[in-house]
Length: 282
Ligand SMILES: Nc1ncnc2c1ncn2[C@@H]1O[C@H](COP(=O)(O)OP(=O)(O)O)[C@@H](O)[C@H]1O
Ligand SMILES: [Mg+2]
Image (tube, rainbow, N blue to C red; front, top):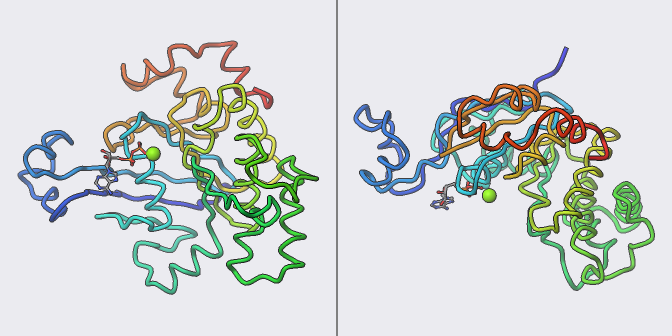
């Protein structure tokens, strides 16, 4: 039996003054653009629901502005949702107080961003160990963990280097090592490869796929690129204007796009290309 790890239920995030206005009968059925013009509110997430099983890579795909980053930030309460529930291991983190939230962020989740967020004046090892350092872990054990993680992402021997000496792809591998070092149960990755050159991106997604076969973390991976989604995802949710318009396995989405919008994304991916993308090494 697959075990549910994350369950998002009817999640809404509305930006602006008095966001709860959107729930009034007069407005709830209006489109995002109508709500924006009538109420001056932005519906970044509209009634979003999904579940992620333990060890699964769940991809959220959509164009810029579709609500992906808002969603992933809600999962750690960097953004407080306007309405809805986020159950992690059955506990609703929307209800968490400051203490529970701090514990949760410390022990369960780690995040990897598009901008790697490394400390330029410190070496690779210190960067990989940074999450442990702020948790007060002593030098010896944080360095030994960080070294293991650098090995895992293919950066053994680079510990003493400065981050600016590394290529973009290598810097993002440091970002991934730093996230893994705190041994999170859940990895949240917000377009981690979007800032990289196409060839490097392809290599990175291949590395992530084989890494995931070793570590089996629960991952929520954000991208605007369907090839990337198909290549790394066990399931894909496609977002538009704050809503999930299709959710399924890569194969389901390629074979049966829910509407013309999704079909436009999937157009280039048929038969052989799909198999290539699904193979580790794509
Ligand atoms: N802090 C904010 N205040 C107001 N609007 C925001 C804020 N953050 C995001 N938005 C809006 O919410 C929508 C979704 O944004 P975002 O989640 O960043 O999309 P994506 O990551 O898919 O590009 C966009 O229209 C964006 O302008
Ligand atoms: Mg974003």
